[in-house]
Length: 227
Ligand code: ADP
Ligand code: ADP
Image 1 (cartoon, rainbow, N blue to C red):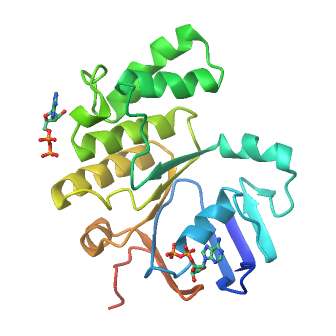
Image 2 (image 1 turned 60 degrees about the vertical axis):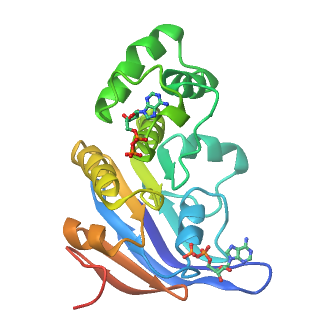
């Protein structure tokens, strides 16, 4: 599903953000990417999303070599990936329904499909009944669930969550991770960047640990810290 072969990324200021990275994520996996600030986690995501290109090495996505993908092909690729951010990125002056509808209209879905699909999306994240609420009327956890529903619009094969629980209290964070786990169980590959030790330790999923641009640990059923 995702494969990095000898991937390095050096930014223009000569910072080596990723240093000869090798890993493969199979369909259906749930993977935590952990590491201190500056370890290279965001760079890793940017390479998968083709927001940045590797300096050297090869990148595969869905079996295709995307290392030298043409720019006009990038939107097609991105439509197969859902992204969730720490800060939700909802539209403040649109309610829950409007936030989803807006994105679906941009993507060119028909009005009939949108009307049929939004309740299904809200059901997946347990938000039925909140259609008319505006973001400021929702708790942080509810806002994040709207953003997860929005990421699911394209029925992505991969869901990438960049510190999705960073702004949430522990109980709410736990609910969000459970929602991601459920989405994973329904077949979507999930890659979650996090700093939260308790979450990683409780989930017992694969852990890819980055330090100074290198993978120092890649462990199935791993914990936040090495035993
Ligand atoms: P993390 O997400 O783990 O905090 P990043 O991937 O953001 O790490 O950063 C890895 C390293 O690359 C850091 O030293 C950071 O300062 C540097 N870096 C990140 N983005 C850029 C950029 N656009 N230009 C130059 N250096 C960058
Ligand atoms: P938390 O303490 O988890 O952040 P809140 O106290 O923000 O939760 O919200 C608790 C519940 O009340 C949520 O279901 C939220 O949707 C609802 N709620 C909060 N503020 C408003 C509001 N101004 N109007 C309508 N519903 C609200």
